[in-house]
Image (cartoon, rainbow, N blue to C red):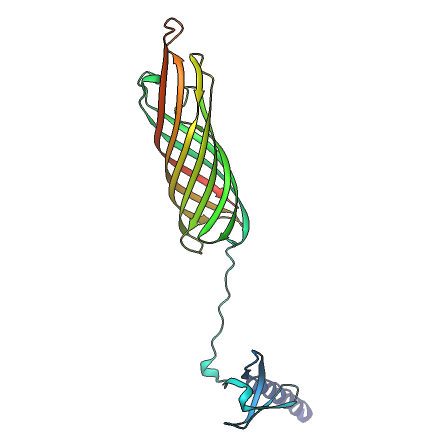
Length: 255
């Protein structure tokens, strides 16, 4: 029994000594060549030398003129580093952005004064240089008046700027390019697209993995012109320059 107690006391003493040694070897000597030595500071004479003992038992001596600074370990001053969460919203990476949008409608003499909403689908591929600057290119299918058989296919440059590098961040988005037009209406003889411009403000939410959900409100500006007849009985040719100015609500996924 006595031997067992002595053995346990020896184990306890070794554990305590090991814990104390870990504290002893936490002093840091920073050298002017940007290296650092961690151990137990034995002696420091200003203008002369610094002695530090490594955990291996080796004692190193440095002249004072090569020492940049010295940090003496104190348990009260020890700060535990908090783990940094990886939100998987990296800089210097390529991004994909898929979006779907509802485009607010407007009355028009071309749709018999019926108020019609539109819709759109879009995709862009770009490169995120940093949190504030991402640039890419994309294309979309936009229908400003659902049921009229007019589709715009814009090709555009895509720009993003996120205001915070965090899980939730407001952002600004800009699309600028040219919108081609395609129509299936029988009375349209000819049509041409024009300049497309769309600024947006929104907010980003984190999704699964490297996926991010984005909601924004944007203003759409699209020019076009049409050559058409009123109907099959009235073949009078009409020319119409159109500028679409619409508000759209968009949901997109970036990864």
